[in-house]
Length: 188
Ligand SMILES: [Zn+2]
Image (cartoon, rainbow, N blue to C red; front, side):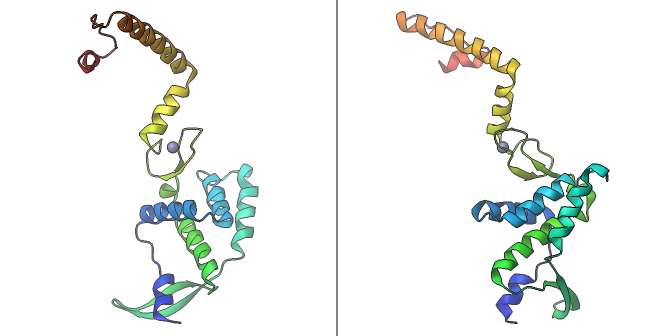
C-alpha cells in the first residue's frame, strides 16, 4: 500500500456537513447511481421506525452487502490507531465507498440525519444539509411565486404595472409614481 493510496483512503470525517457538501458536489460532477440510491434510501429512513419503511431498510441492507470495511492498525501522530479501510482497492470503487461511508456516518447520528433535506422548491429539489428550507433565494422566490394565491396577486400587480407604463409612455413628462414600496418612486 503506497503512501498516496493511504492518504486517499484514510478518511475520518470530523465535520459531517463538509463531508456531505463535498459528496453532493462530487455527485453533481460525476453522478453515481449506487451512491445516489443509498442517499435516497437513507433520506427515507429519517424519523421513527415504521413498518412502511421496512422495504427501504431491506433494499439498503441489500446494497450494503457489497461494501466491506476492514480495520488495520497504523502509526499516526497520536500513536497507534485502528483505522477502517475499504476492502476493495479499485479506484472506481473507492469513490463509491467514500460516498457510502459519509452517508452511513450520518445514519449514526439521528439528529444530524434529520438535517438531510431537499430544496422545498418542487422544480429544484436540490440536496442540502442544514436547517434551511430552500437552497437559494431564487428557489425561495420561485416557490413563493408558484403558489396560486401569489400568482394571482402577481398578475394583478403586473397588470397595474403595465397600465402605468403605458400611461407614462403616452405622457413621458408625467412621472407617475407606481409601486407598493415608497423607495420604488425614487428608483424611477
Ligand atoms: Zn433549490
